[in-house]
Every structure is written in C-alpha cells, then in structure tokens.
Amino acid sequence: MLTDLVGVIGCVFAPAVKRGNPVAVDVKIPTVLRAQADGQASVSVDGETVGQVFDSLIAKFPGIKPNLIGDDGGMHKFVNVYVNDDDIRYLEKLETKLEAGDTVTILPAVAGGAI
Amino acid sequence: MELRLTDTQYATIIGNCYDGLPNEACGLLLGPMTGRMSGGVPTGVVSEARPCVNADASARTYTVAPKNMLQAMRAAEAAGTEIVGVWHSHTHTDPFPSPTDVRTAVDPSWMYVIVSLKHGAPQLRAYTIANEIITEIPVAILAR
Image (cartoon, rainbow over all chains, first blue to last red; front, side, top):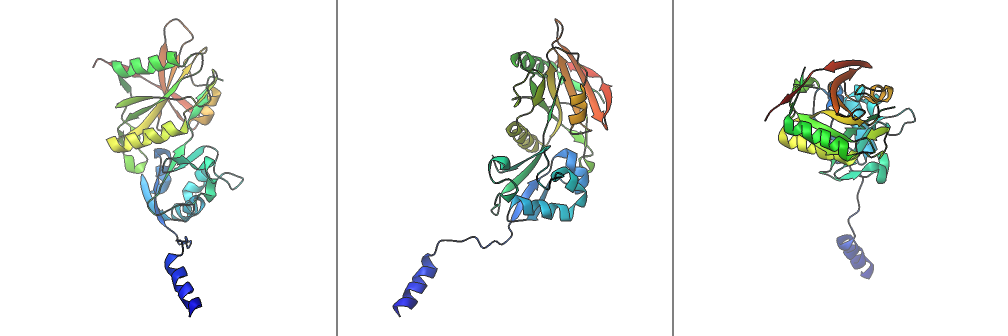
C-alpha cells in the first residue's frame, strides 16, 4: 500500500524527462544554400539534436549535404550554426540538443584578406 | 549590375576601414534581391551598410564575426531584404581580390567590396566572384 502510494507520488512529482521524441524546429537557410533547398529561406524539420536536424534537412534536400558536412563527417568548416543566440561550436556541436520552437540558423563563414 | 551606395553608406564604409587600422576592417551590405526563390541576385541597391567585427583582428585577413552574421541575417529578414555583399579593407595592397578572397568567396551572387588604404586617398572597388572568376562591377555614389 505504502509502496503503491510512493509509486503514485513518484509519478506525479517525477521531474520531466525528455523522452527523445523528435521536435520540430525552424531552420534558417542563407541565400547561398537556397538553390539546394528549393529556394526556401526557412524550413521546418524534426530532430532532437542539431545533427539530427541536419540529417532531416539532407534527407529533404540531398544537394545541401556537401555544404553542411565536412569530409570528416563533422560540421563543415565554412559553416557556422546557431541555436537561437548560441554558436553550437561552444555548446555540443552537432550533439547540441534542441527543444520545440528552437531556431537553427545556418550561416556561411565570411572571410578573406589581402594575402 | 551596378553597386549603388548612398554617400552616407560610402562614408560609413570608408570610416569603418580607417577605424579598423592597423587591422583589416569588414562589414556587410544588406539590400533587396531579385529572384529570391532561386537563390536571388542583388539589385545593386544597398539598404544598409553594417560595420562588423573582424574576428581575425589581423592586418592581413578578415573573418566577419559569426555573431554579426547572425545579427545581419535577422535584420535583413525583419526588413524584407537579404545580405547582398561584404566589404573589407586592404591596408597595404590594391583594391583587387587576393587569392584568399577568391578562394573563400562564399556566395557567387554577392557584391565583394574592397577598400584599399594603400595610397593617400581610399580606393573603393566592387566585384562579383563566381567560380573563381573575378568580375568588376561599377560603383555609383548617390547623393542622398
């Protein structure tokens, strides 16, 4: 009886645990990649992590893959990715977890110089 | 295509290049594009010249601070425009794309503006860089 009660209380007051269900997030696509994304500036795809969102994006638009993923399987070095206001290089990179409503922004690295 | 800058935008760009000395300076151009659904092509009109931080803090290279890119992309989206180009300074060389500029040119539709501070007066030139082919585009400075 007491065990049952503890079980019930445990269920009611157990902290929310993320169950790993894919969440829908908006992905902002820079102009240079839109030709590979049917011209869209923003798409909604599912994924628990940035890596999974990339997988979903690539499944939808295979031509975008060489611009997102480097030869080593990691994030392409000429791409910066933000989740909301945070650069994922300073979070968990492709393993960065996402929540419903997050915005993933893909940005080209813009560089050059006199040499 | 012709790059059309207002005199205020021109002053912003040149001022930013001098402010950045001894390092290279950089910034982003926002403006309208045509044919956005197919990737878009700048019209040449600039709605905003946004100075950015050179994350390299170098006299020989520049990298637009990623946070500035994010801010510019959001500003463009809010204004119904796009990022249509980038400027940077060459502190001791001519206003012509270097091999690094060509190799790292990120968007073939963008206007690449280079300001040379090599001589007494600043020299501003603009180009497109597509498939490693450099094409100079004319620049008009418009009184506002």
